Length: 294
Image (cartoon, rainbow, N blue to C red; front, side):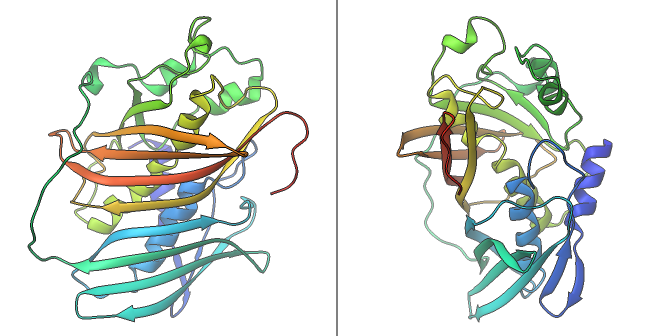
């Protein structure tokens, strides 16, 4: 387990301040605001800790309201909306400086049988062991900003193996415009058999590359001059158990962008091709000097 993953697991171990009130912190960060995947993961931890045993999250719907400040803690207030016979609903609000920066509604369900089908098919891709690490790929990115290059190549909590090209990886890659991104993810550690932890880590990873998919459709990437963006909302559906300490394939595509917004959706597959998670996100994308506030 590398130091970045150790820090992430520590960040997910929220401090309980009072019944249904939790506090989380952020890593020291200079390049970006609080990572959206971190806020979503911590909010899911807070909500999950108030749920009766034997109920597992099957969906979440979240809105990113304000940029998170990495220099101060985040307080998570959990509202117990409903505890039914089969479903439990929680609403979580993340607060900084007295204002909501993020809201999430999450639904938890007991395990029960039902009809099954899967129409989504895992795309044919190379095995992750045959692909270079993200750090190895990022070393070759054509980036003029040294601070941004250092941020991209630093140690990460999750091993990422891109199947699709990275924008700016070589002089030829910027000419490629594709609304698709496919990445293998894996947390390199023997994690405990806690179902909530594995879905929380999937939620954390889910926010890494969705906005990139919208940018790639236009031949753009983070670090490109005059490009700014942010996650606006995020929805996930958990169909079956997924092990975050085993490889899972995240196949993403962007069906639309316009009006300074873009839509991206993704499927997470187990190594055997089973669909485990579906994700949809709308993001903010602005290009140019004139950028109003959020």
